[in-house]
Amino acid sequence: MDNERRFASTVAWNAGDQQLDQFFSTRDSEGAHSTWTPNTDVYETEESLVVRMELSGINREDLEISLHERLLVVRGMRRDPCRTQKCKFRQMEIEYGFFERRILLPRSVNASAARAQFNNGFLHVSLPKSPLSQHTTVTVILEKE
Image 1: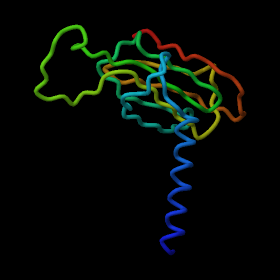
Image 2 (image 1 turned 60 degrees about the vertical axis):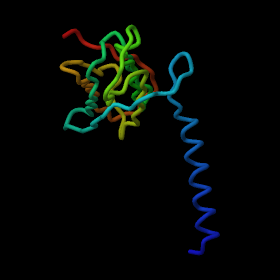
Image 3 (image 1 turned 180 degrees about the vertical axis):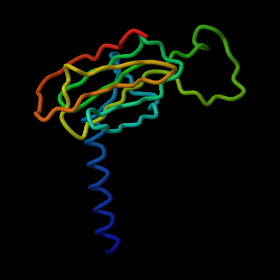
């Protein structure tokens, strides 16, 4: 491939990335972009799709989980303890602030039977498989510990 065609492919790819970023924009209610992305596993059992997300240091009250057809959206906030007091960091590796994670599920699920648990810094969302495509939006409620 000559350099001119390679450059054109790269430009087209970058334009596509920008369109995807705009479509899947992750902003909070004030319009701020996500500041970090939690580590996430998605796996399948015989009965369900399961999403496990690492969310240490987050309060249950600061989480919002919704499901629209096959798109699972998890939003939240990890609050910075140094916002309320003056801190002088010597090392800073923990990310704070708003996050939003959008996960396109590989198959249809029964949205009304979705369950979410938050224990020991991990969010587990269990989504029973459904043979039929469902056109619905639900808010998934965290179960009591």
